[in-house]
Length: 133
Image 1 (tube, rainbow, N blue to C red):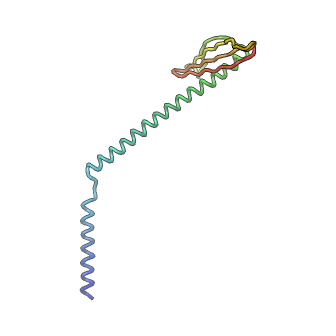
Image 2 (tube, rainbow, N blue to C red):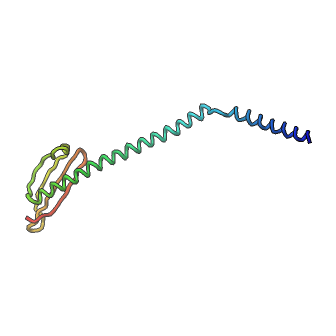
Image 3 (spheres, rainbow, N blue to C red):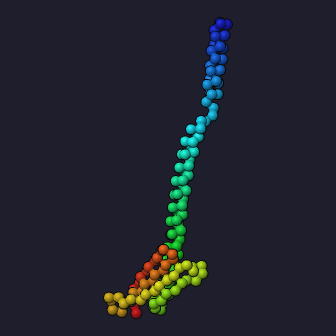
């Protein structure tokens, strides 16, 4: 019985020593593993930054188009009361936005077409409306 306990104890000690020595040899990362991990993280960050930049550009464009549309609607309401052609710029904080207004005859008798064109940089919004003269 003593011999079997001693044998089990020796085997258990051998396993512990073997596992500890095996694990202690594989504790750190190799330079190749670190370079591969950095390449993966770097490519993911580049993709993330590109995507973020793209979507911020879309948001900026939509802000400009929305402001131009609201300004064009406001100018169109003014034109309904007093239709006249003209050009100009909006007041602060919309100094970068310009407008052009046109009054055209429509093919229908007694009806005119009002056109308002608002520009801001490369963006352009055009609204049309028919009104009675």
